[in-house]
Image 1: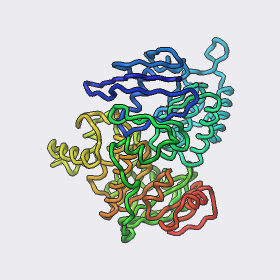
Image 2: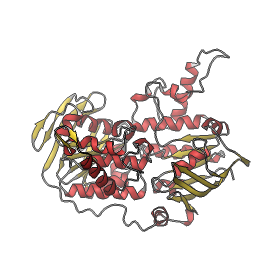
Image 3: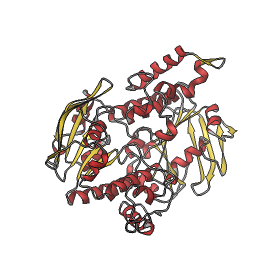
Image 4: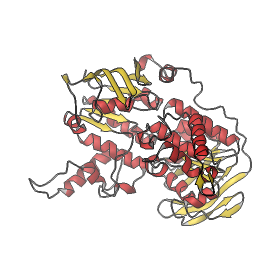
Length: 499
């Protein structure tokens, strides 16, 4: 075994998050680590790599007992980590991000070998299917491309143990295929992977074994070939979950929102579609198709070059997010860390910020109404917190996403835009989010959903608009949907648009 952890305990402020957990990985294995959000997966890996210290237990790496005091010590031992949350420095170039702390210099001078680092960066990115200049500022990239940069950073170290925490959460099918080919090639060279993901299809396609944690305890380890989806879900949540998607019983009404000839220079062009009351309108496409840029422009984050928005048949001018909210639009960004949360604020404050009018009288916030709102939303979405004043940044990724979604529910928007709403969310929480979306649609909310998961798009949407290179290629009704036809248009197939 290349990694063996035994009897690991860990508590934070008296709250025990890992209880007697044992976990082992064989050399050259791709081993999945699964569990609901808050089950302890990321904490276990942070203990392995020296980010957190353990309270009890032992760790062996490559046959020797270790106790890393700092992640650099784990890195020197050949362990690389791709964290769930991006660690990109937006003002630096891609190459500067990749070589940060390991810059190449001429001899003992401080003169950088800039061209050599740029060339190596572009070659590495090309292996991951990304053709882009190394000098491009990292902050200009989409979340999906930033995720590929994180993957490249890990691969650059030539590590023989790579931990991947939700590495494909922002990637589309083609990019995932490229990544999986790279992982399998590295596995054939003896590299070991610990793979954390909530996407069952990925786990069963890529991994050899799977270990499941629940509530900080080890449930068990299974050989992938000897188990199935339902058994793993039951191990994770402790019960049968039922169907993955709600039964489709939506009955869309009148057109609520319409965009006409939407354009933004270099991002998308001449896009028109409508969304009806009680409808889930899906938007699909590959990374770089302009999906996120489109909905961010609709919500006022970006400036529109041309086109117009109609709400209930009347033209409206949405110049910024505040105006969008006043018109009854809500927006859940794919980037919860910078656009969805104020991470240093408490959970309570994050939940109440869009709802201040409802809990205030004459500019004074009612503490009772604020706590009532917090209690109701936390219960409705099953958000796991230690209390109202826990900071958002200390929540697990899935619980952060629930907070992002919950804060819009109280104001009951007319139109709710969700960009990758289940990114980094476990299978149980996904089902809860799907149910909430379905309930909102039944209440007449017009929902626009972007998702890179084709089963999710097909399972939830009334209709789907498919984008490619900034253009809307087609709009398909539910009965027409399948993965092949979506990918046909997403990869630039014949354009045929219906509103």
